[in-house]
Image (cartoon, helix red, strand yellow):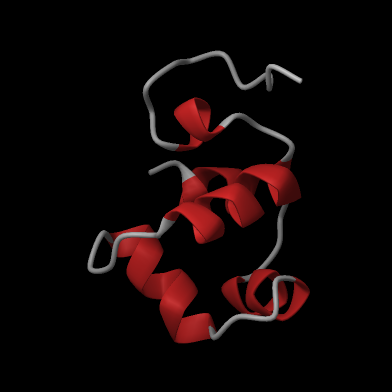
Length: 68
C-alpha cells in the first residue's frame, strides 16, 4: 500500500494522519508496515483523505486520479 509514500509526500506525521481520520497512530504504523490490512471502509477513508483512487492506494495502478 502507498500509504506511507502519500503521507510523506504531504509531510504529515502518522499522528497527524491518525488524528485527522480519528484513528490510532499505532494502526497507521501497522498499515504502513503491512502488519495489518485495511478494511474497505478504511481504504475509502485513506483514498478520500489523499484524493486518490483505491487502486492507486493499493498499487494496482500508477494513475492517482479517482474515477468520480
